[in-house]
Each structure stands twice: as structure tokens, then as C-alpha cells.
Image (cartoon, rainbow, N blue to C red):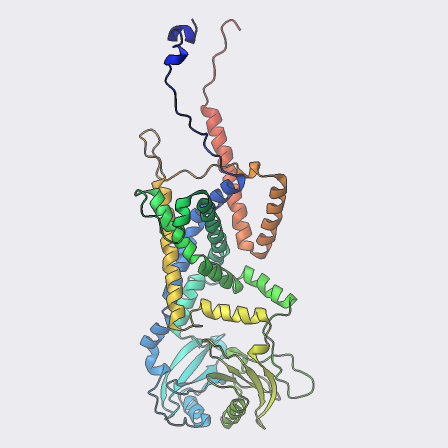
Length: 488
């Protein structure tokens, strides 16, 4: 007996209730489907690294205040409005307090800043012992082991943010976070733009979350997306500037600067007609450990640099080798920055070479300014506040992203799951051939420039393919086998 016979004759057509015509569900474009899936997986897997980077970066933003609280008595003095003592007297006092090592650099004190005399010792490597001297009384205020001018506290916070105190291995975490941050930021912006074009409500709430929606995933998504739109420029900035001094991407960036001849120019320290191979700005351990420098030469060199127009805070570096010039460099990192340099003959006090920040290549300027802004010193406290707001905003975006993942979980008794299912795969198969080829070429190029991004993307793709194969096998194995027809 057929199914029709069991169900009885059909009802007359006029007695059949009319069903509302519902349009078929709109299928997302392959580009949109691929973007959603990439944004989802990258957000889930990379977000933990972003959380660590945001938390450690947030801690670093208060480094100047930490220095003031811990080392204020060494870093500053009460400004007396008097003329500082000769540098020779101040350096003699520092030498008496620190009889070993050679003078690597001197930062003359002025106003409320102490004079900082750095002594290099072979066992310290890149670090130095810095003696802090009152420029008005030559009183030694204390000593610290510093790294490129950073106090122990700032150095500790810097290492925490860069490598979690794990050395070279730890640098991979921060580079991975920076490599994916721009992808997540731009991907989220594109997704929100697509929603804005498709929905008038989204257009009205581009910069303000839509609080009229019911509580749940839609409201969370509104906060997630709107906050991301506000942060996108700052996140792109942090990603780019963070990559410039990362391990692998930084090397690629440096090679690009070399190819374009866009690095900050070196300054010749040669006192002869033939330029010396070494450039200006020797640092820390470059100075021989047992070289004796006449303290009176510091006053002569500083006077020549001031006459040449180098105002504000400066760092003086004695010659690393006999018969070469000293260098004096402006070190004011706040806007407008002062980075001019001069080479000075310590014997006669004459300027032998000069390099002005205004003459640097544009990329070198942008790179230097970007790093200072990333470190929170370019615009002073305003810079610190902006970085703190970016870090807090990024943490909120990550939390909302994970909350959406949890809110989208199945809750039916027969389909319970701890988290939501990932977006459906298949976007790549639906792409036109030209888009696949172009996307592959761009991905390879970006992966070459950002190696950790390329390797992690390959790992994501491999895991996704394996998960798809396993899912298909499970579905195939669970399909019921139809019984063979009778008599076959």
C-alpha cells in the first residue's frame, strides 16, 4: 500500500490554507563566508596572545610613573635656577663613586634632571652602571644598572611586554600577536561594513552600539563591532610599529629600509679625510673598559655642540678609538622630537660632521616617530592615556568575541554544546578561479614578509582541512544503510 493511500485522498485545492510566501534564505557570498570563517578562527586562536600583549602593554604605559615613584630621588633634583657645575667636576664625583669601568656616555643634567654618567664593563654586555649626579652640587644621588637609558623597572616591564622574560623564544608571542592584529582589525571592519550596507539599523549604529536589540548575541556583537570600529586605526598602528622591531618581520622591514636606503644616516667620526667605518652614537659596551678620558674634554665638546644649536637633553659619547671624533646626540623623544647629531673633535672643540633629523629619509622619520609613540613617550601623558585606552578596548573586544562564541552555543536538549559551532566551510570552493589565484599570491607574499603569520596560517588551514575530513568521515559512517530490495 502506498503512502498516498495511507494518507487518504488529497484535500480540495480551494480548501487548502494559503501559506505565506517566505523568500529563500539569502546565501552569503563566498568572499563574505571566507572572511567570517577566517575572522572567527583567527579571533579564537590568536586572541589569547592579544590578551597577553594588551595586559603587558597596559603595564608598560605607566613606566614613567613607576620610575618616578621608585627612582625619583636619583632621576631628579630640586631645580635651583643656578648654572650647573662644570661637567669635569660632576664626572670626577661619579668616578669617585664608581672607580671601575670606562665612561660610555654622559647625559648632562639641566633644570630638575640629574647628570647621568654611564660606565661600561665587559661583564654587563649591553647594560651599564649609571651614576646620577646633582648638576648643581656634584653630589652623587645613587647608581642603577640601566639598559639603553632605561631603569631596571622600565627594562623589566619592557622585557615582559616583548618576550615575557623568556628571551628569544618569548619574542615569538608578541610577533604572532602583532602579525595577526592587523588581519583581525581589517577583517572585523570589513564584516561590519558589509552589515552596515545590508541593514539600515547597522548604518545608524556604526559608531554607537545598538542597545535596542534584545539581550543576547546581537547586543554583544554590537558592542564588539562598534568598539572595534573605534579602535581600528590605533590597532593597525600598534600592529605595524610592533612588527618593525620584531624578530622575523623586523628583519624583513630592516632589509626593506636597506634596499630603499631609508635608514637613519650614520655620522662620520673620522678626523681624517678618509671616513671611518664606524658611525656615530656608540653605545654602552662599545667603549673599551680601561680607556681613560679627560673629564675636561666633556665641557669642551658640550660647548661646541651647544654652539652648533643642539639644545635640550643630549647624550655625549666619547670616541671608541683614538683619533676619532666624539658624538653628541639630542635625545628629546617628545613632540616635536629633537634628534640632531654632531661629531666633535675633542681636542679643538670643532664640529667635524653633522646629521640633522630634518634631513633623514621619510621612512626613517616615520619609523622613529612610530616607535616612540608605541612606547608612549612621543606625546607625554596624552600618549600614555591613548595607549592605555587601546589596550583596555582591545581586551573588551576579545571578551565580547568569546562571549558571542558562548552565546551562540546550541542549547536544545538533543544538541547541547559548550560553545557555538564555527561558520560553515566551503567559501574557498565557491570562489572564482582568479580570486583563488590572486589570494594565494597575496598570502604567499604576506607570509614571506611576516613569517610567523604565514606559518600560523598554514597551521590553521591544515587543522581546518583535517577537521573537515574527520567530520565527513563521521557523517558517512553514521548514515543508515538502506536494506536491499526483496528478491534481489
